Length: 386
Image (tube, rainbow, N blue to C red; front, side, top):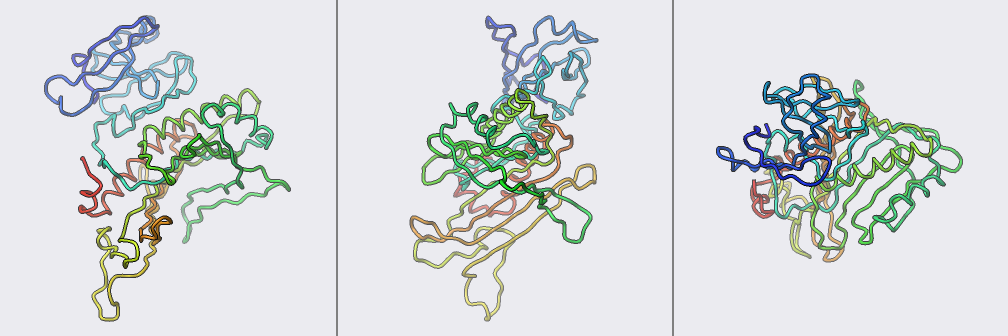
C-alpha cells in the first residue's frame, strides 16, 4: 500500500486543493514509496455517503481518498460517487477529473509502482526506440483535412510534420490453429494517410490516423537517453486527450479503444567493426550453440521469432512477441542484435482508462521479460540497479 495517514506531511498552498506529500517515515522508509498526492477540498467529503475522508491520492489526476475509519482507499467516480478499493485493489484505478472527464497527467504511476513492485532498472539500457499505441474504432469523418486541422493543436510541441500510408488494423485473435493478427479493411480510392507530428529534434513524435494514435521516442543518431516509460505514457495521455477533445469539437464521435500495444526496440552490440559476430549465447540465456563438428563456430546470423499468449482470469487477451535479428550499425558497420519486445492485446474495458491499464501491464511484462531472457553479464554492462 501507499502508506498510512501517519506518513503524511502536508504542505498547504493557496489553491482550491491542498498539495501533500507521502513521506516514508520509520519502518519501510527505504522502500522509496514517497508519492505526491492531492488533498480533497473539504466540500468533497460531503459528497461521500460515508464522509470522514482524510486525503485524496492523485493517480493519473484521479481522486482517491483514504478512509481512516475503515483503513481503505475509495475512488471517486463521475458525478461524485465513491467506490471502495479495499486494501490491495488500488491498481484498479479509473482516472477521472472531478467533473467526470478522463484525467491526463504525464508521468503518472504504473500498477507496479502503486503496489510497490520493484521492476528491474538499468542505468544504460540498450533501448533505441519505444512506441505506445492505442487502436480504436474508425473515426470515419477524420479525413485528411481534419488531420491537418488536428495538427494545429499539437503544433507548439510538434512543429514538424510528415505523411505516411495508414497502418492496417491489428487484432490479437484466438481459437484458430494459426491466429491471425492483422485485420484488413476496404480503403477508399484515396486512402486517408497517417500523419507524423515531430518535435524539433525529431526524436519524439505523435502518429495519428483515423483508427490509431501512436507516441514514439527514438534515439536516432543522437546521444539522447531513453526518457523512461512514465514520460512516454504522459505524452500519450496528453495526445489522446487532445484527440478526444478535437473529436468532440468536430463532431467526429467518441474514441473507443479496441487494442493497445507497447513496443521496445533494443540494439545490443555483438562485436567490434570488421570482427565476427559474437555468439548469441553470450546475450540470451535461452540460446545454446550446437556442439557438433558440422557447425564451425557461432552462427554468422541469427533470426528468432517467439510469441507467448497472455491471459486475464484464464482467458487469452493478448500476446507478447519476442523478435531478434542480426544487423550492423550504419556508422561503424559493427555487428549488433536487434531485440524487439512487443505486447499487444485487448483492454479489459473499451475505454481509454482500460487501454492505459493494458499498457501499464505490458510495460511490466516487457521489462521483466527482457531481464529474464538476457544474461547477467549484460545486466552488469548496462548498469542494473535493481
